[in-house]
Image (cartoon, rainbow, N blue to C red; front, top):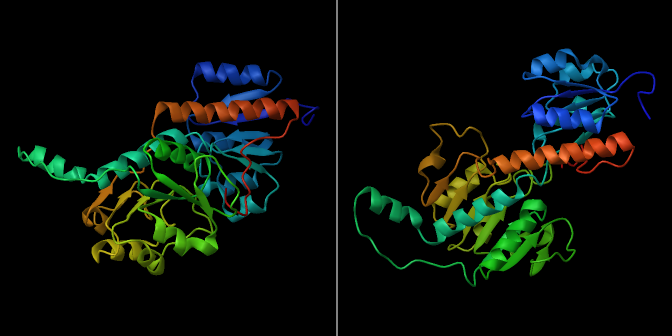
Length: 318
């Protein structure tokens, strides 16, 4: 066991209340566990820390003489993957999977709103106007899901409940429950051309950044919609805006954006047939609880000398 000559030092930030702090101390009874409300205070104590749950700056990493493991409360730990941390031997885990359920729900909401032109009803209510019209239904339509991780898999299940055909795109074509077919990156244009909704659930990595440009949006049906809830930047913003304003595609539902917060002068606020939400799809108390449970389970594993879960490949970015 590492730390045999001194207690392990565990530093925590984030939403840790007294009950969770006591549980963590119970999981690691021989450790010194400290909670900090401010990252700066936590980083001031970094010198002899073994474990950190929270964000760690490059300056603090340079002073971390005994650090072995950092846990990110985020599902996508992009901000932790600066060059010094990637080059270090410190293990990084993340909370991926904690927001899969509400993110998939958010995607279904955006798809239904776009498919049914729900903003027309909102406008009608605002103007006290009884405006009935023919609208679509998801039944029989095809959803193309970019990424088959936790949120992509949960979205596939929900889409099946709406009687949709489900396509997936990822690095391999391994059969996955509730996906009717799986495509590789080399088949991207075929995948896009078959989809009535293209939904990005994949993280932003060097491999996925700007993977959707002008050629890709032109490969989509003019009646298709683009939805993104994972990370902005998978689609090139300029190409996406052009696709929306020149009617290459029918509209978009955007919860994740290339620049966040979305600037007040961003043209996406007024893009045609576009619904903008403030990267808010997974902001639920249950998401926070699942993230804590992932860390607590990993701490049990760490104390027992067992392999950790949700280890991030620091070079791939997820």
